[in-house]
Length: 482
Image (cartoon, rainbow, N blue to C red; front, side):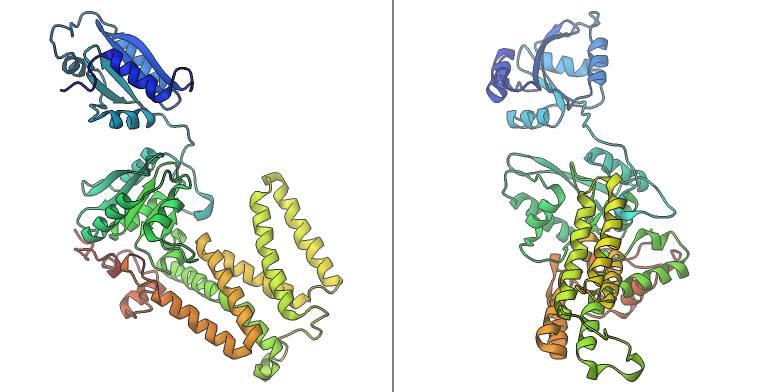
């Protein structure tokens, strides 16, 4: 065991150089005696478990153990330390990072240093996430504590093949990022690519945690589509790990990043697997249809309402009899954007006032807008139906992107009629089919078409079926049977 400092005084001077004298109240250094050995204790107040530290220090006041008889005081102290999580820092930078991560350091007169893991991060207990609620199933969800999150996954997968690789990302923030995967199920080449991308990240900090990490990993820039799937449920994360997916768990983030993913991963929900296969299939089909109609309903209705020659006789009732003084396109655009503004207002409104704001928006604004002739009743109806269909999409990121694409189709239909609508639709399909995050076709298994895999997307297959791991994970062992 080599000393990290020449003397204890040098260690104290190093600590003062890093944190100053009285410049930050939470950087603490104390002179103590462990058994009959004088030591310097360093820690950051608020990140350590005070009760655990007090208990340890109390137990180590016993003078009966002589630890100063050897010149290697660090080795003696380490052998008598009554705690399970004890380690030695490899360098002074490693010591500094450990202190800022919530570990406590003990430094002897000879400069020998040991660390104990007594982290106690402020946070909340696991609770059901608001974005992924289920009628039946577990009610625990990820929190902002990376140790707690990895434990929630480990509890569901009691296997020695489950791996959590810890990485520190960013130069100043040094955010902890755990790569979670099943050894033997995850693709090693894909893992190496993610490790390299993590090492190549050059920034001072990831204050927006998982979202910042996504943008650095996949160079998303102004691409509106979500390249990864976020989940706040440990059961969903565990299920994906068994399929050969890779999860990235970021400290201070209550959600995990799942890769690789396709657009259909964003359209699945845990509730489908909490019901019988037939019911799960019915729910899934409704959700897929709802996502499709949320994109096409509004611009297609506008096309039929303005181009009456396209309307068959049995649909003659489509379109307002009196479009009003405001152009129909402007009505649809204002109403659709207005719904989004109301959704943002609901997010930022205090919970006790949310209901009142919804009533004002729905009854007062909507009805008055119809009465004064700003909107027609049919416009409000179809915009409301499109909004409800958008809310049926489980992924918040995909639902926002769907709204943007819907507005693009609406503008194309208003500018060039039916040719504009179908050309824009073809452009969107080509755009989605050309995306390959982590070399994974975004529309797989639709494009390229894999019939069996597409059937498993449309149908919630019984869990007793021997379904192979998805092709997109490139798992070295596609069979899930042990």
